[in-house]
Length: 65
Image 1 (cartoon, rainbow, N blue to C red):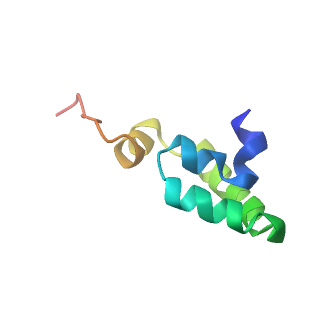
Image 2 (cartoon, one colour):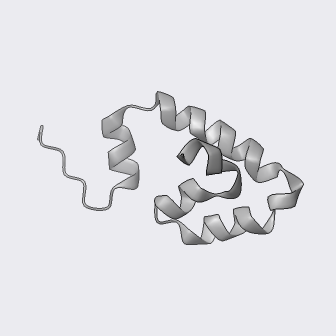
């Protein structure tokens, strides 16, 4: 379901970045957020799970160290 709502900034709200999510909503009619959301979706799809968690999870701890 998330990949359907990336153009309106749902992924930003999900990641806790409310300010960016609101900016996506403000520029909704320009289709710019849809293009950026598509590109970010591809980046999220191909990112390493540990790197993604390190960047977006506030309580992340590496269990390898």
